[in-house]
Image 1: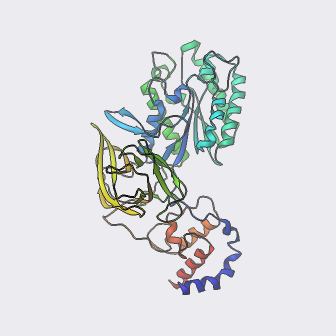
Image 2 (image 1 turned 180 degrees about the vertical axis):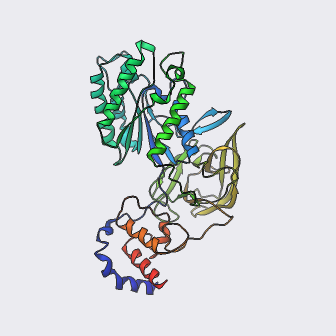
Image 3 (image 1 turned 45 degrees about the vertical axis):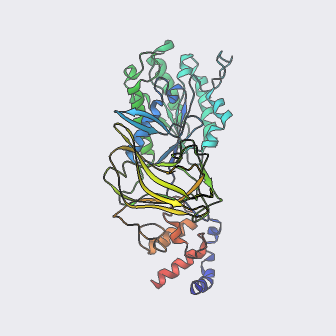
Length: 476
């Protein structure tokens, strides 16, 4: 270490100019890409009137089939809800911002049932700012058409709504403006629906690439996919077509699933950039914590448990983890209850007869210390909707989770190779390129294993690690 420090001191001046902009780069970066955050926004069709979950549950199912990592967000619904599909009970992320009976903006005089403006509803909940969606799926206007509103007024209202959503979304976020389905209730007809959908397309095309038109109407078979009970909302088949349509739109937007089939790492979570993708299980509350960490500065905190199975969970991609796949799973937990607590690492599957639970790693955690739950050779079982979760035997204590690794395996865990920041198992010049680009904040640069780049062992990445890496490469 003394030799390394001396080399750093001798080399720092030669690289200071090149990396002057990197001195303010983030100290740490998440080891894997965050799931895409998707926010369904709209009226009763988004809410799922006539069929609980509407298109959203089928969208969830289709995205998992495609191997796309995602997180549904919004002020309504629950992190985990269920529905029966093809005889199997499936879990889906039920968060959304869909409100039955709502128009684009509040209508005056105010209807007898009170507020009905989607814009005002979202504003009152600070919904978009709180959710920070990467993708918004917007379907609104059916209730404006049942009220036979003027199209020019609808066009103006749509601009106001879209401007608000864009203003609270992260930079680079995309709104997909969906056309409305066919309906014949309240004087509805193909001409009225068609004219309104042309207005939606006109508004979408007046913006740049961050607002795009999506022809939801075109994925449906007219009134054949509308519920005959009200001639207004999609039936089950219609909602399923909509969900799969939106999944295709999202896949195209992301350029495919983004999964490298040769990358053995399925999930790596160190919680340094939050808990995206992780959900509470049961009554538990899950949040990022900076007061405890196995390594780095953060972990996931699990509190408020009222049953031993309450905990923290992550839905794994069935595309990356088909039945028969052998994986290695490793994680660390900690509790400070004052007593020894028995922890379990469990996989849940949706089977033909309901949920199946398979505990495959256990460990006793003494208070105040981290313990590792590990299984180097777990074989994925038959079933859909794989959920990895952490629970206790009988205790209801709060706990922390950190350093989760799930990867395809031959029955062993790889050791981190010093300098291997791109996670390919080797240390070479390509790692220096990746680290340099990250330090210079080049967009799109990802460190798959930042710990391997911490050559100075000070729990941060900076110019000194870059200098050390170049020196090691020169010696190599």
